Amino acid sequence: MNTGILEFVTIFVLAAFVGNEVIGRVPSILHTPLMSGSNAIHGIVLVGTILVMGNAHGSMQITLAFFAVVLATLNIVGGFVVTDRMLEMFKPKPTDRAPKSGADDGSDDTAPGGAA
Amino acid sequence: MTLDTGIDLVYLLAAIGFILALKGLSSPKQARNGNLLGAAAAALAVGFTFAYPAVRAHTLNLVLTLVAMVIGAAIAVPAARKVKMTAMPQMVAIFNGVGGGAAALVSVVVFLIEAPGKPAVYRIAEVLFGVLVGCVSFSGSVIAFAKLQELMTGRPVTYPAQQVINAIVALAIVALAVGTLVTGNVPLLVATAVLSLVLGVIFVLPIGGADVPVLISLLNSFTGLAVAASGFTLDNNLLIIAGTLVGASGILLTRMMSKAMGRSLANVLFSAFGSVVTAAGGADGSGETRPVKAGTPEDIGVLLAYARKVVIIPGYGLAVAQAQHTARELADLLTERGVEVFYAIHPVAGRMPGHMNVLLAEANVPYDELKEMDEANPEMATADVALVVGANDTVNPAAKNTPGSPIYGMPIINADEAANIVFLKRSMRPGFAGIDNELLFDEKTTMLFGDAKDTLSKLVAAVKDA
Image (cartoon, rainbow over all chains, first blue to last red; front, side, top):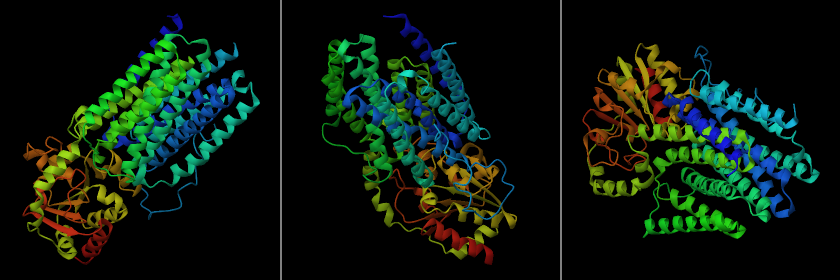
């Protein structure tokens, strides 16, 4: 067994503990957004698909890598956009009680991660 | 500083960003910033990945990468923007599934690239783990999506010798995996992948619709682990950290969700919950002929208008009827008349924990009017009216009183303690769990049948006249 793998195992174990600690006390109202947000974070597999595509040779490998990039992009872009949509509804202060406005969708932010 | 070191530093920054993003997502005030921070970290990491010479070595591959990303984004953005809030859970399911599929494909391609040179055993093991978990997550999420989207029945699917078939598939996967490990043979890996897809399907089929959200959370955690495995195969720290963060926090979140339903995770996954329930529901079917007290909107409007304290208990019926705005209108009207109004939110109201809060926040319901179950229950006994809008199982006293009931032990909102109970419901049909609710037949209970939005509008009019 080479020594490199042990470093990665160390990182893995430490990350597991961090993952467990960092979301310690989540109010249940945030369970759905948290699930959706962490879903977006594992979309970072996109980095892996890009690296793999760079090293792919022959039509079989390239085709599989191509699909991998499409799927990973769906995960990361869709994940962050959907989470943002959920969270934009948690307004900080309910001071403004204007009648429901249909004008606030799609006006402000461009898709997060879309620029990637 | 070499280029590789520079990129590794950027990856480190991105990893910190992800940790802070998860931390932010755990608090109501920071949640949105947390998500944006996560997105920024992801964009940074993806952008700098293109600095690797290997990524740009072949023009064709580079162009295909960019084309694939454009296609992915072009599908994802409109889908995520247009999806209705009620359909959010299945959207999360499908975005999770494709992530698992991507992780599995990364592992497969790495294996294909290295296969001619007979990869080291630990490398094959990493690939196998990524393929197995990624494939289970992919096909499992697709079935979960189909169940929630009602493309197939939400009831648990059972068939003869189910356990035996599951065991055979699992054993076959183990055998194929061992074979792949020893020989490094490509067809064996492909066979492992195919059987893992089958395993994902048969794992999810017996899980009932009401339990699917817990399942999605578990599959989300699986995808995280598959991504971490991809990180191992690529010797990439960022994928290992991000994947493991999601894997670990996902397991924790899954356990919190099952706890909110008063059941263990094992019970959620392996009990074929709904099939037992169906039988129980059938046996109690005679109950539906018993008389219930149905009221008119005018009666109930008066009851509400002259109450001191009204507790609104929303459920999925409110969500499907898109009645959250009308509910708020009614609450505002009552508040103006001096009635104390708040919403009691069961942790699993809607289709996912926290789903109902998202829907009510969409209707601009002030945050401080939303009370979680533990906060609301002590106040139920002093409430004049419990207004149950499209909810059923989350107020079913069987969870407290009937030890044999499948939902026995699930915490509920104690609507039965209020002086009056009003159910806005489409019909006498049992709720998502398929169990009869004794509370419907209680003498304190008044029923108002119809679509939640419709009946709420009538109540608004009735309160105005009262």
